[in-house]
Amino acid sequence: MRMTFRPYPGMTIACAILFAILCGLGTWQLERLQWKLALIARVNSHMAAAPLTLDAIRAMNVDEAQYRRVSLDGRFDHAHEAYVFTTDAGAPVYHVLTPFILRCGRVLMVDRGEVPRERLDPATRVLGNVSGRTQLTGVWRVPDAPGAFTPPPDTAHRIWYSRDLAGIAAADHLALAAPVVIEADSAPNPGGFPKGGQTVVAFRNQHLSYAVTWFGLAICLLGVWFAYHISKGRIGLK
Image (cartoon, rainbow, N blue to C red):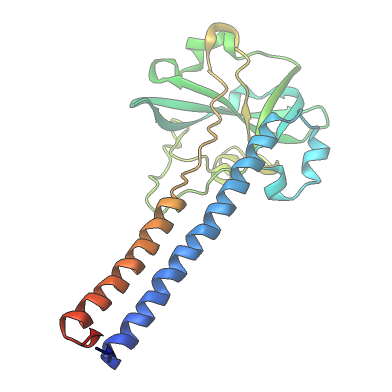
């Protein structure tokens, strides 16, 4: 009895290349998993930290500043509210974006929270549009840019379909101090609207399952290679 090992060269080379690709994809997903876990830990750390001043947060790079809490002192320019359409639990809602004029004169855009369609008109929530000097705490966010399929804004009604800060600022001839939106915290507004605290910290993390899939396919390919050669008598004992 002797061991036979005579694999088909062409098939073996092709399977070896595919096996290497599958293992490479699995390894890449494991690297992505570590990156995603580090990102989640950093964001949670930022959200739990004490609020910073505007000058302190502007001294940071984009990644380090993202999701940091910041304290601002100034007043809202309610006359230039803009509305961003979205949904909440399947119901249509609008995020109220309002310019916030700091005491130094610089302007930032604040996402004050969401209102239902029947509260879109500021006249239905007068109590919530506080006038005069105020302080607020919010989350520093660089919003996603409008996508290729984002509908154009309804500028006549000041309704947008993404937080397009450049477009919103241009429509009102505003010069923003930073291309960010400050997401107001959950401190209640008089009258209940807008409802702040809408910051969502949720990151899709399926990299481990993807890695298992790629490595599983690599093992299956190896098994098929062995089974085929054994069935042809190219590998085995004789």
